[in-house]
Image: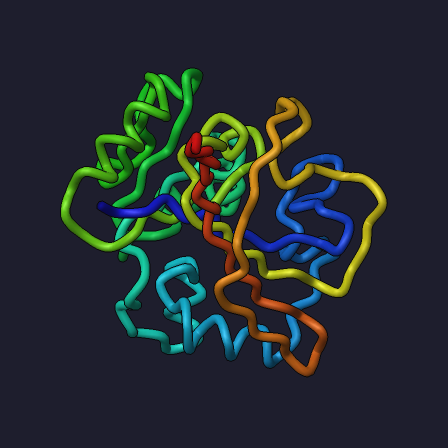
Length: 206
């Protein structure tokens, strides 16, 4: 079964965007992109680069992790504001929104219904894993379906912003197991966590 992987950049204080939700790595963003961060991204996760960035950097690698990307409307609109109706033309692209009405791009599937049900259908299909790109509100909706959490943890704090699971997430503790980590010279850490399997203690009577 395919996994839903929340692959996301976060600050040390747990934010994925500033208070206004704009692109933190954009021209006016606060997100630093050191050379080794980009090199690691290209080497290990080339499919997560948007189409224009892949073209500018000469990246043609298909990638080994994801063939599908899922994102929420606010995250998608960052690309739309930049003139991109499909920021990931090399991936199967789904956008979850009840307000868009229709997809701005024939290659982008609009999910107007229950995102949990749609993700469960995707998991049953053949293929590589499913990349949940954001935003926080959608991640909160899909909280129980996230199998893997990969944080690109920046040595940056911002004090306030959009949390990892949005501002409306409910209190629902979950345990995660660290399965891989790479710490770059710039201070960025790539941390991979798998959802821990709950164990039930069984007492056998004498």
